[in-house]
Amino acid sequence: MLAGEGYDVIIVGRRPTVLADAIKWIGPQATAVTADCSDPSQVPAVAAAVGDREVDVLFNNAGAFISGDDATLTDLADRWRAVFESNVTSAVLLTESLRPKLRRPGARIILVSSIAAQRGGGGPYSAAKAALHGWAFDLATQLGPEGITANVIAPGFVTDSEFFNGRMTESGYESRVNASLLKKPGQPADIAEAVRWLAGPGGAFVTGQIINVNGGTVLGR
Ligand SMILES: NC(=O)c1ccc[n+]([C@@H]2O[C@H](COP(=O)([O-])OP(=O)(O)OC[C@H]3O[C@@H](n4cnc5c(N)ncnc54)[C@H](OP(=O)(O)O)[C@@H]3O)[C@@H](O)[C@H]2O)c1
Image 1 (tube, rainbow, N blue to C red):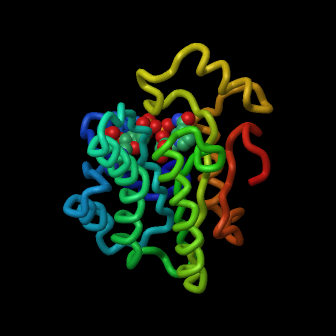
Image 2: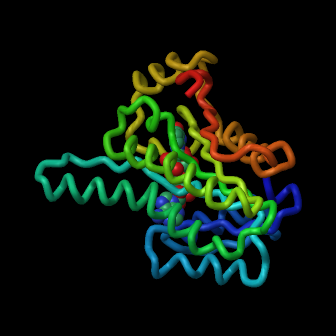
């Protein structure tokens, strides 16, 4: 979407084959960096790929729901750490490593949390996504005077991604759809449109906000 609007796009993920498929789909104006954004030793590769350019839009999309039986306190601690690394540390490291390269004024930072941050239900996942909200307020406060916005998109139930791989049941699907006022799941394109708005001229005066894209499942928070 951003590539179609003339941006040089750099995509980041841990699986080279997935990135290669994405580049074929996006087009040659995109480049890929294979990196685990929660690993401080791997994140500098992204800044290296940016090089001397300025960053207009930083979209922190990495995250996952990580299951576990939490049988012991060690298991519990491991899962909470893993969930926070996936959803919080990844965004913090990428943002801080690219902070010097953000366009001043004009850059847009976008984080992705979840409806789970607002209504619970996800244990450490809810807690981790909620942590992004507080941190986004700090980013907006710190970077606002430099002309940089920082906002969070909080999606509801979105299909056609790998997020629910192996975890979705028919009843789970139906209950999520029925919980939305629009009685349908979200699509990745619904999230992309919110990104387009925040990244574009319409988002210029929007900062420190949680933007709900959830079909009305959670109202007005
Ligand atoms: N789908 C939903 O219903 C829903 C609802 C609310 C919020 N969300 C949030 O929306 C975001 C996108 O989710 P999605 O539905 O598109 O799921 P997805 O298909 O699983 O996408 C997650 C992406 O993040 C990448 N990633 C995960 N951990 C990473 C890491 N440490 N370093 C670099 N890349 C990493 C994954 O690629 P690799 O595995 O190759 O690294 C994958 O491309 C997530 O933050 C998710 O929590 C989703």
